[in-house]
Each structure stands twice: as C-alpha cells, then as structure tokens.
Amino acid sequence: MTTRIEPITEKSISEAKEILLQGGIIGMPTETVYGLAAVGTDSVAVKKIYEVKGRPSDNPLIAHIHKDYDLNKLVYIDNDYATELFRAYSPGPLTLVFRSKGVICREAVCGGETLAVRIPSHEGCQRLLKAVDAPIVAPSANLSKHTSPVTAMHVYNDLNGKIPLILDGGKCSGGIESTVVDVTGDVPRILRAGLITKEMIEKITEKCEIARHKETDKVRSPGVKYRHYRPNCETALFKESELDKVKELYESYLKAGKKPFVLCSDRVKEKLGDMNFLLLGKNEEEIASNLYLKLLEGEKIADIIIAVEMPDEKGVNLGIMNRLRKSCG
Ligand code: TXA
Ligand code: MG
Image (tube, rainbow, N blue to C red; front, side, top):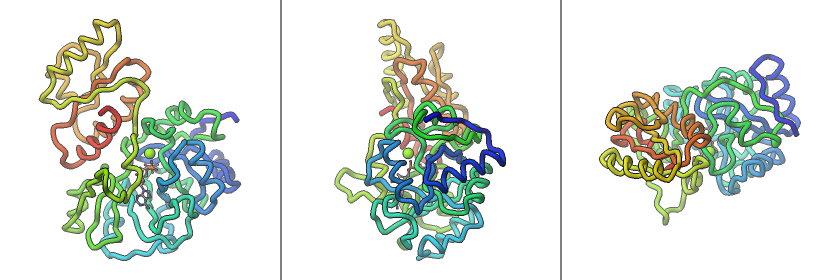
C-alpha cells in the first residue's frame, strides 16, 4: 500500500471520509498529536488500528466528536460538573471518561463500561469530523511505545505502507496528548495529565484528584502502565540539580566518538555552556509544544539524548514530566 500525505482541502476531506466509511483507517491531525482514525462503530476497522500500531488489546481508545455532535448519544452524563468542564475547555485538549451507552464498538473500549470522549479544536480535524458526522476513535498515530507524532511526516515515518492517507494539518500546536479526566465519580480524577491542568479544572469544580498509578493498582487508564513515547536512541534523564552529571555523561560520549545532545529548556541551557542542544523553549506551553518534536528530531541525529527535568510538577509541567520520565527515564 502506498501512503499519501495530503493537505486539508475539500477533496482530501471527502476522500478521507470515503476511506473511513468503507472501513479504512487514516492519519488525522489534532491540536495535541496526530491520531490514527477509524469510525468508532466499525469493529473491523478498529481492530486494524490495534494491528497497525501493535497496541496492547487492553488499552481503550478515545472517541473524537465534532462540536455540534450530541454527546448524549454516546454516554451517560452522571455529573453536572462534566458538562461544565466541557463547556469551559472544549473544543480543546480535554478528554472526559463517562459511562458508555455501548454505541462505540467493544473493541475500541476493550470490553469496558466506560468511554473516553474529546472534541478536538484543530480546524481541519473538526472539518473531517463534521463531514463524517460519526464518532471517530483514534489513538496517537505512532507505532506502540514510540514517541507520539506531531507532524504528518512523523506519522509517515512510523506507518508508511500501512495506511492509505495522512491528512496534513501542520505541526500540532499543543504537542502532548489531551488531559484524560474520569468524570464518573463525585470528584473529577485526572488519569493522564496534559495542557488542561489540575488548577484549571479546580476553577470549575473546586475539587480535583490526580490518580496515582502504582504497580499494584487496578489500572483505570491502562495506557499509563506501558512504556511509552520512547525515541529510537539511547536516553538519560537528570534533575536540574545534577547538571554536573549531565556534563560528565556528555563528555564520556564525546570521548567515545559519539554524538550526545542535551534536551532542556532555554533557561537550563544558560547554565550549561557550549554543547549540542535540543532546545525546548522558554515557558511551559512552548516546552510541551516542542517536546515530541525535539525527541523525534533528536533520535535522527543523536547517539544519546540527555534530558533535564522540569523545575516542578505544577500546572503543565506535570504533563511534561510524565512524558519525560517515560520517554527518557
Ligand atoms: O490528545 C489525545 O488524546 C490524542 C489525540 C489523537 O486525540 N490521543 C491519544 O490517544 O493520546 P492514546 O490512545 O494514545 O491515549 C489514550 C489514553 C490512554 O492512556 C488510555 O488508556 C486512556 O486514554 N483511555 C481511553 N479510554 C479510556 C477509558 N474508557 N477509561 C480510562 N482511560 C481511557
Ligand atoms: Mg499514545
């Protein structure tokens, strides 16, 4: 199969729609990362997603809907605060987990009772969702365990020959996956941190919990238990208080005739001096937006990516640190 990358036009949208309605799967842009899309009621198509990615079959998918789609068709909204959260932060990088009405096929929810739903804000993605006018399930469009794609070319590099079409919606602005929040209980619980932060959720709901995933837990969001986001080169991760170790490791690679790169914020670079850098930017939003981009750039040019942690785990940094640990730790 040849894989084509097409800019978003009326023609490519209608072509994408045809492929999806005939049970195919395609790459689609969102504002967070690129998704590997199938119609959520089509169990044959959904199985293809798991095959193509090599995704574990116990890790459920998110259903993506356009902004005028009636959420009540898919889920039971047990708590008013869920509606308020969507009103405040959607369309955008927020996924809510509800009790499912069973419209989305079993394969997509791994036989579970709940369904994760999000309304992407990416304009091209909205156009596709509107055209199809059905919920589209999509995990990130990378091979399982690899770094998530934030350009159409990244999707191509992982899935060339396995899917017919990738819609090119430019570089994803958000850069890390949506915040996943369980809204089935009295208090919202963050299952995966992202750009919609605990602090932002608390503005709407007063309380918000963060699920702590331990080895022994019955996992509520199975995706968090797997090794994830890894670039195809060696990696190391240090705290900002360990810059001497960063330099030591960096030097040892240079001496061995290898190419080390340091992945860090602009601020940390100032403390390190003359080295090869993969620079993430100045503030949290910029750093999130550049994280996967720089990891995927790094794997092509570096023998090792030596990453430096964020200064704290507040706000967006919680989501960034969660990805950094899995990709480089
Ligand atoms: O930003 C995003 O969320 C991107 C774009 C493409 O929309 N999608 C994405 O999908 O990151 P994926 O499949 O890579 O990650 C989905 C996460 C996983 O951690 C999965 O376990 C969790 O959402 N999830 C999905 N359905 C769930 C459910 N019913 N209950 C709990 N967690 C769920
Ligand atoms: Mg993923």
